[in-house]
Image (cartoon, rainbow, N blue to C red):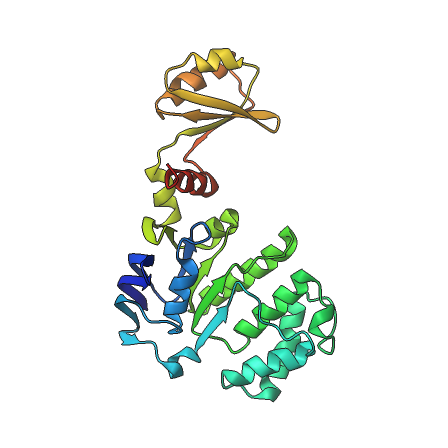
Length: 298
């Protein structure tokens, strides 16, 4: 179990991380989100023992993370660190050996990973010839090939199209099933919502949201309605609790100040006994992210 307790980090007069607490259990995924500069990368560096907290404690199964324990951590940094002149094989085997894996074993595992991630090319291709998406896959393979117990992924979907993003997401889910402890950061809110058991959102170094994705969404109330109906905007706007309306594809998204307005809206659009689409939900994680980021600027 990874536990951060009352952790803060100052750089001179600047507070990068301010008294955060989080727990991630084996076989669980924690999504760590926030705008650039929110404190995510600083948190990762403290977890890796690259830098020390100013106050608070970070423990793995009750013990501070030392150099030996760090060899059991797979870390995918946001700033990519592949050696461009090396071949894929040379690159991956180098990182595998750093984590105590035998070259012969790593070579066999590499072939399997290449197939699973559908990497275009062969293990003898140089990294500099890879597309951005394939280079990202090789970076991920280098991070995971030695089967780490604790995994930190900083923006794992960078440079990937939706198909390849799904491939990587499946691998992360497999890691979870094998019992790995996983913390990852992404601006892909759909991916965060699908993968995360728990979520922590930082703003200016502080925790502003924490809990399961479902509980966080429901805490904002069911203030979003999607409809497909011929009812006029003016009719909808006349209902108390309707804040705004926007076009969304062939339908409309209605933003509410009061979730109870949904009853009147449903009664209106279904007056003829049929409505092609009506869905009242809590805001999406993407909506919440934008709202919380905007709140911090007010």
